[in-house]
Image (cartoon, rainbow, N blue to C red; front, top):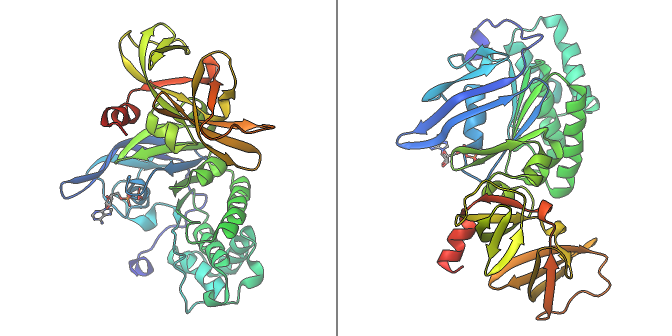
Length: 370
Ligand code: ADP
């Protein structure tokens, strides 16, 4: 590897914090990352959340130095690293497939990066133990990767990334190769690691909203090469700015409405109160209401329709209704008797629980008759 021959200063303590400044990446004609502006603060976990192909891994690889932006700059710890090779950026990276060297014992896998970074020989053993202890794998130092479970291998991969004491940790779908039970254990493990490394910035690529909601201080929502939204999990859930965010972060009812006046919209002939908005009368918009904020029975903003499906979900019933051709979900707690399929139903929501969004896919679905 080229890192073997390049003298590199040890990166301790490594600078933290990441900034994308108008970063675009293209493959031929295809722009796969379009002018990304995003800052990850020192010590912050930022999830890059979005569907497959939305540009998340490309953004992460631009930080690592594995792709060259067509335009824009990448900063780590305030330093412009856009032109620096990966091994000089002070980053640790973990990918979906653990990529451990099969012929090296756990401790030698972890030591590998340290040697490449020219860590003084007498420090290596201590740093390896420190990193393995961080991930609870010190007892497995002399095993080979094949003697470990998938979850254990991924812990070793994380230890290897942490051994150089990076200021920035890049995680690319680190849990997606694990089964569901291991995944939730590793999620808790990563949250603990974050608490133990309060100065490290973590950029976490995932298409799984549960991982993003559980781990991230903030979530950057990506779609089609663009950043769509960015905020704390709670902000994105309560106040999404786009239909895409509303439906990708949690479940959402998205209803196509027409603005009739200040704080008033019309849905299929019925009028509803919503938070005050700046949209002009006559404009089309999408009303977003979370299913757990929809109540059963009459109330403010009542909607009447027909029950199309009822699902028992443990702590709630999810009632699907057809409201004059529009689908609506309500997650209802403590229902003594769930409504019958085909029965008439009245549902309602409080004006302050609705969010009005720019018209998008809900309108397109209506127009398409879907
Ligand atoms: P995500 O991580 O969100 O799934 P990626 O960043 O991996 O998305 O990919 C974004 C787009 O870039 C995809 O359409 C993918 O096919 C394309 N892409 C990624 N790497 C390459 C490459 N080396 N050459 C050409 N296209 C690529």
